[in-house]
Every structure is written in structure tokens, then in C-alpha cells.
Amino acid sequence: MQHIHSLNPSSNSLAIAIAIIGAELIVYRVNRLPEQRAHLLGLVQMADTLGVLSSTDRATLAISLTDGMAQ
Image 1 (cartoon, rainbow, N blue to C red):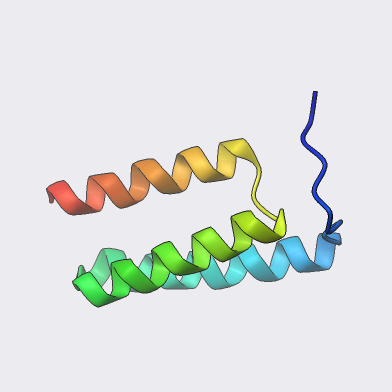
Image 2 (cartoon, rainbow, N blue to C red):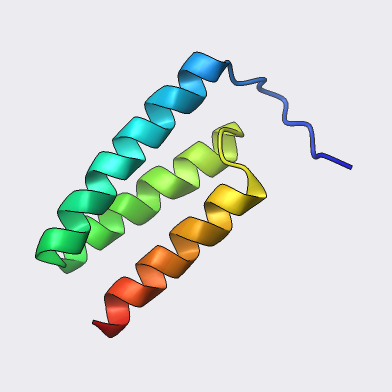
């Protein structure tokens, strides 16, 4: 059963969230600065709270951010 959020994000909101998070993820993967990781985590948390991330998106981002810490 899919969890239904109080906010129903449109496909446009989803596309914007993915574009912003994707751009920030690229910057973080290139520079690996702690403040960039913190900013990215904040964006992910906000997008998750707003209901625009699927469980797959969350898992993928968690792995990407964890991998970034080890490198």
C-alpha cells in the first residue's frame, strides 16, 4: 500500500525536486565538501517531507550519500 501524503505533489513538482537534488548531488560528488552534503541532506529531507520522493528515491540517495562519505 502506498503512503498518501497530505500534499499531493504534481509531476512538475517531482521533476523540479529531482532536478535540484540531482544538480546538488553532482556538485557534492565532484567537491565532497561537508557543507554541500549537509545542504543536500536538507534538500532530501524537505522533498521527502513534501512527499515528492519515493522509497526508491530515498534509498538511492541514502546509498549515494553514504558512498560519498567513504570515498
